[in-house]
Amino acid sequence: MSTKLRMQRRFKSALLIAALFSVSAQPAYPQQPSTSQQQTASQTQAHAILMRMAEFLANAKAFSVSLRSGYDAVQPSGQKIEFGELRNITVSRPDRLRVESERSDGTRTVAVFDGKDITVVDAANNVYASKQQPGNVDVTLVHFVRDLGLRFPLAMLLTSRLPAEFEERVRQVDYVEKTNIEGVPTHHIAARTDTVDFQVWIADGNEPYPVRVVLTYKNAPGQPQFWAQLSNWNFAPKLADDTFVVKIPDGAQKIAFAADVPTLPSNSRRSTPATGGTK
Image 1: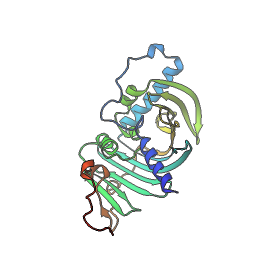
Image 2: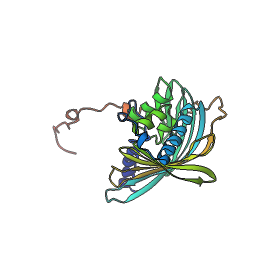
Image 3: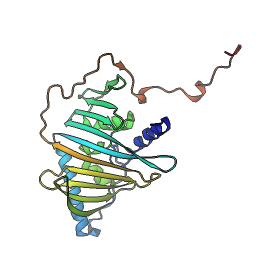
Image 4: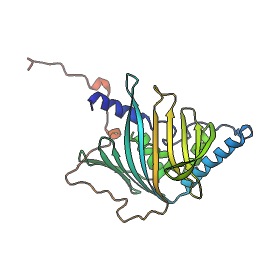
């Protein structure tokens, strides 16, 4: 892959967490008056199913899930290039989180929050970053995305604020159909926010977890999409003593998170005039 294309990949993929399924410390939009009286029976059903999923995930004490995703990187020419990622996520509320990731180029990382510190290990480059992080999973996800500027697609699905986030952001929701996704009976829901159109396929039954998600960034150039297939949901995971312990590779160098590296003002980065012959 060319350096130019790789840069486009990194830039565009970072943008994909900026809308609906990223997390925020404050409500993204002021809550609008209820339009339930204007909803059709189908829309009322869709809203109820969406909120049932949100409440179910928000109230889960612990869970693990595998996530396979892809996203469009829109090039300057307008061409869309899709890249992918695999993630294995384990959450134990209120204050434990582990995310193992593998990008389509083979890069692997592990991020762990143990209730006191957040640590990210990049085994391919044999480096890691770590810093103190008080608070719960919700607070840590906000810090991870907003303050550290790190990618975490669908982070909002892991927070206990999910029902409130949906109520604040979703402007329209419709029921599409009942279908099967890889053998799982699901409800296909289509919804809209101010910046994102999204579809979610929600498992039918007593555990209404998301099976598939598709986001369309309708206001972004080229209207790129992000999709995710979620599988192997487990709401009673067996957590080992070392599930939320980070194993630092031998010889790994500790570095700072990029967001923590101070930047010099532009006037401090002026080149010093040469005072002699050139080499």
